[in-house]
Image (cartoon, rainbow, N blue to C red; front, top):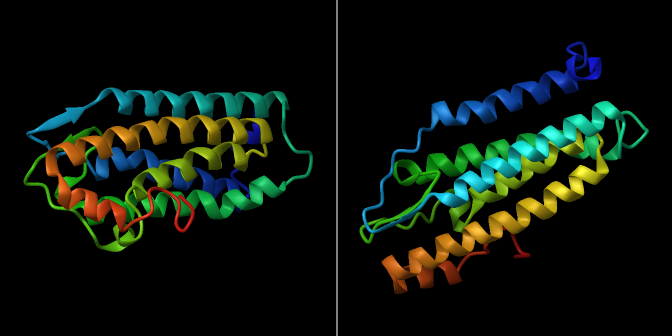
Length: 193
């Protein structure tokens, strides 16, 4: 358990600082938009549960020494030095560009503007990409290869489901304008998907 509190290592200080900023997102950027036409809240709870379970298992398995890479720092840990802050950056920048339209639930109104600036010039769901990077980076940081794979698969499935819900609602409420906007952007991963 002592390995979790290595405040003499800059990597752990960075890890905890980014974790604090990720949690602080709820205070810094409260979910204020209320779509009048359609909304869905269940998928947010599923996403939160998946993140919490992923992190609890990652830390538990790492404390027990299960499925961890031997080298310290491992290649996964080194990759997390880039992906963890990048995920936070994607989240914060995307929220700022969404402005008053940011919400943690899926809420859509027919008067809603389609954001086409910042990361939304290229992606439909940069917030979810940021969340994926943040979630998968935690087991990576601890060098836990099994939980890295499991976190990636579970978050991809859950986020893909959420994106489908959101896109269907946007098409139903906003219509052709959204369909045209959607066709000009990658869904989740630049130049791939």
